[in-house]
Image (cartoon, rainbow, N blue to C red; front, side):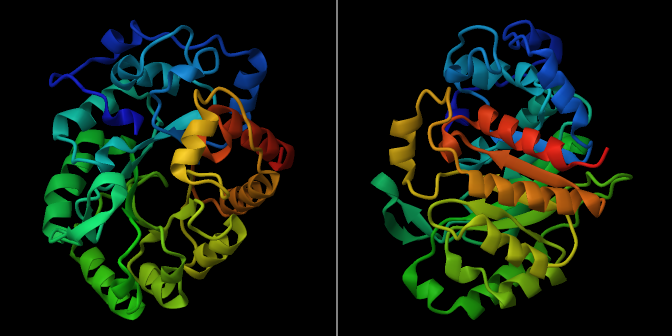
Length: 337
């Protein structure tokens, strides 16, 4: 992913980064649209280090590495963006200093979605092409998850921490064959995680889980998640069911924050989408049905005074900022007032 770029070890103050990457000149209409979005709606993208967003998010050309290191302040000044997914953490745990860096670069009211390291969410270790090579001894290790992820994340991001998402990669067939056993094992893991700090508002951090195996999205799983006060993250991905079906699973967990990650076009594999959509500067495969389902779900959640995180990747339709613009326009048409 694009957040794999190298980072300096030292702390970077907001004014130092902001002077390096300038935001695009956002038109008045976009500012007006952003002003219509409720404060409890957190729209954002999966990472922000895409040179193809020149003119959409960034004023001039910058490399992927430059944007990864210094682009967050410009990104966060976009009228619609009040969140971003920290995907880089999925590949290796981030140190406390990196979380502090991100928190310093983001404005007040910004809430990150943070992916847990796959060190604890992938049942297998993988070689070239993602092919499983052996079982992962650290899978569902709650102590490791707490020490390497939860504690530094919460301490470093502070009030800017939103959902802490455990994304589970495709499981081995033998594990999927006994889904009830996995539910019990996941239940034990979730109970062993530390409680997250309370907040005066609805932006308190919370745990969520995301799957890449449809067979795991069962009433038994949803009942367990509800009992642990853990949210099911809607994963819009070619391996998973359509948005409407997954939103039914969310409803089974009871009231709570809504978390959606639209990461991949339903008809494409990841490598196919990357090839088709780069440099991610235009919409190529608009999915109106998914957009309509998301607008309806977001509106229902907001009307119940609950927060929403809606994170979109470039591989959903070709350009995440433009997809979010379309979604925001759809919401503006139905929001009260």
